Image (cartoon, rainbow, N blue to C red; front, side, top):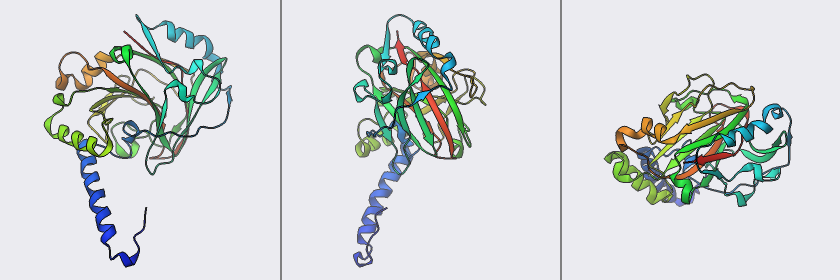
Length: 295
């Protein structure tokens, strides 16, 4: 934090405090905090070394192909990791790092699981994510498919609780949600937030979380914003290899926002993947296979 020199007589500090207070009031209105910022702020981050992963290789190669084959209709890979060489995540794949202000960032790299390139996000008392904007047919996709595996766990992980808002892996589906569907009080907050933080502030998102201790299909609001709804997608178990996930986005969106939005589903805007251990600590490696959208 920048320190004000005593000779300033507090004028600079007061001005900064007023601006900071305005941002804090807007953030509170829409739920924008450091913990929900992974959805809202985009930066680039230098990635690290090449690593060959052997501990999760046993069921990776053939399983990844099976996961791709399970997609319905026309499929749209989202910046596929399987087409990248091991090493730093290629900017050409469309993924952009989203660090959080005043939070130590994660690191990410493409590694080999068997013979298949996958993404590894390493989190050590840290948090950040990687986003991929969607265009064309990807925005109109209804089904979402991916594979993930986890090694390690946060010290505390508890859906719906601020102090426990650490998860070994997350996948966000961000929607191009019309403000006219948002309740008036939240709508005002989002408009003000977009004035301060940019038009990328979303009005609705689903967040799929890795949480083996929760009942499958648990749905809860984020403890930091009602505009993000968290879902536990099926049974999970740490250290037990890869888990295939296929979701009907329209059905999940209907559960989360249907009472407010009505029938149907808005177009998708972006996919974000992340891991976080900054709230409680811990050491986590989150592995993501190719993420695929389909009709």
